[in-house]
Image (cartoon, rainbow, N blue to C red; front, side):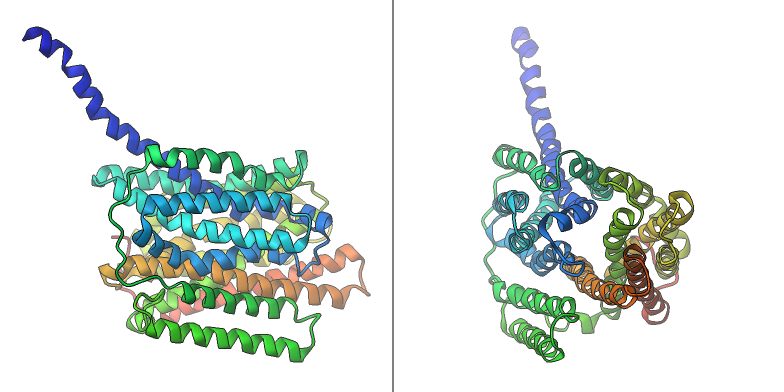
Amino acid sequence: MVEENAIDPEPKAYRKRRPVDRRWLALLLVCGAQLMIVLDGTIVNVALPAIQNSLGFSETGLSWVVNAYLLTFGGFLLLGGRAGDIFGRRRVFAFGLALFTVASLLCGLAGSQGLLVAARALQGIGGAIIAPAALSIIITTFKDPADRARAMGIWAFVVSGGASIGVLLGGVLTQTMGWPWIFFVNLPVGLVALALCRPLLNPDLAPDKRGGFDLPGAFLVTASLVVAVYAVVGAGQNSPALTALLLFAAAALMVAFAAVEQRTSAPLIPPGIFARSRNLTVSNVIMALAVVGMVGWFFFSALYFQRVLGYDSLATGLAYLPATVALGVISQGPAARAVDRFGIKPTIIGGLGMMAAGLLLFARAPVGGSFLVDVLPGMLILGIGAAFGFMAVILASTTGVPDNEAGLASGLVNTSQQMGGALGLAVLAAVAAAYTAMTTGSQSTVAALNSGYHAAFIVGAVCVIVGALLAATQLRLPKDAGPE
């Protein structure tokens, strides 16, 4: 009996530790997949000039390299969340990983503008499938509140820190190996993650097929936004009649989307949800406006660094580090403490005000600008403001929303983030191209390009200011509203 007791504790201890170890390995797996998605949001910006030189994109056409990803990611994000409920989270997560990995391979192999844009759109669909499934896996894997809080902290660190890794990695890869490698780097991560899905992730439970699957709605809303973006981007080259026709088609597709949502049993956006929550409606508009400024800054600052200041890809990646590090660090604590102390609305107004100030500082950056004098101040102000502003807007979107709609509200504000970025970047690209064309005759080519970038920064700042004004006048929040 003594001998039995001496032998038994080790297997029991081993059996007790094993599921704990497996949960944290599962967390590393889903965080690795999420990191790919986050990296793809910033790694491409550094490589934009190299992609433009290689494939011959125009200044406005180059925006499709970013917009194709944003549009499909935003258009299919809510559908991706529903897919996990219907078909099983592990199965959907693995499918999204496979799709994203294949799309990354196609992006790297793309030898034409059309193939790259199509592959980027496919990447966006893969990302829209991975992101909600990954978050659901974390929530369902970690039942203990303390473990869940720790897991979500690691998740938040990956999301915020991924931007910093992306800009630096994009610079290194583009400079040393060429722009296709910003996409090829996803292949080993995707393949390893796929191989580990079955051994590390919990098996799917019986799927919940109640309510159906709103695939027509996802296609209609995405098609509407794609046509609208195409109309805006091509407005300078197309005839006014064609532009008007495209905008009418986009509106018709959006009306069809609204009709589908009224009739389907499982709508992406339940009819009446915005009418029931003023804060949700206003927050989504504020988020879309704020993202116009942020996405526009990433896009045009990369062009400014390389086309105007003459930075190479590596120097461009290093130049972004102060802003992305500031955004990541402040998002981890100071932003939440600011909301606790001052409330949601003042934090939004202050954060967006700083973002607008940063954009306006970039709007005066000269052709022979100095990094320390003309770039760094605006970059830091913008990054700090974004850390405060975006977190507070997300909190505002869920304030007053019933518990059973909190997940939907969070998904909607994330969708607004992607869609606002895509539509806004299309407008800013058209503004920059038009202003550059207007000033080309009276200035050097580089100065004319810089004038176009200035115009885009100013329009982006105006959008952010409008968002701050909406927060000040339209949000109805308790004075002490803060994170629960």
